[in-house]
Amino acid sequence: MKLEAQRRAVVQYGKKMLAAGLTTGTGGNLSLRDPETGLIALTPSGVEYPVITEEDVVLLDPEGAVVDGKRKPSSEAGFHLALYKKRADIGAVVHTHSVYATTLACLHWEIPPVHYLIGFAGKKVPLAPYATFGTEALAEKVADGIADGNAVLLANHGLVAVGVDLASAFSCAEEIELVARIYYQARCAGPPRLIDDAEMDRVIEQFRTYGK
Image 1 (cartoon, rainbow, N blue to C red):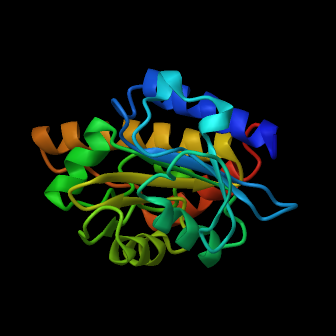
Image 2: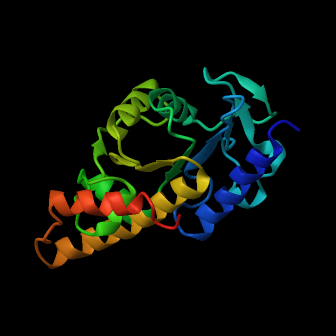
């Protein structure tokens, strides 16, 4: 089987995404790019995470053609491909429908630096304007919205997080869901006080060596 290890990782992180409460049912999707071949291992469309196998994971070339796999690729393959084309440093993409991040996306709020853990994504998490799921328009808005950060909210939809590998993309999605919850709850109590730009520069610099 081609890229067996990468396909196995996609299966494992799909189950982790479900267990962590970052999505439900068949919602969301994730992918991993192989740096040697440029091929992308992507979750299939409409298959629940507990039953996805390595054989179900679809391999795409950078233009979106199916190289291996019998399943239909995720309907959101377009924005995965657009993100990989936009930035060479992106090695994995995780798309969730996590509750608090999606709540903010439905309110059309971006996430400001309310907590230092937003540094996993950058100085803030911007909001990409609404577009119908699975469309080229959404792919363009996601790629434009990510800029040089690691996460973007999709209006009335969910969250996209990226990283050099699935571990980092997943960690980003998980931490941003926590920050989204903190921000929502803080705003319910009153205007939160935000971390200033200079301090976020220091936080992001420290994150570069965190755990290394």
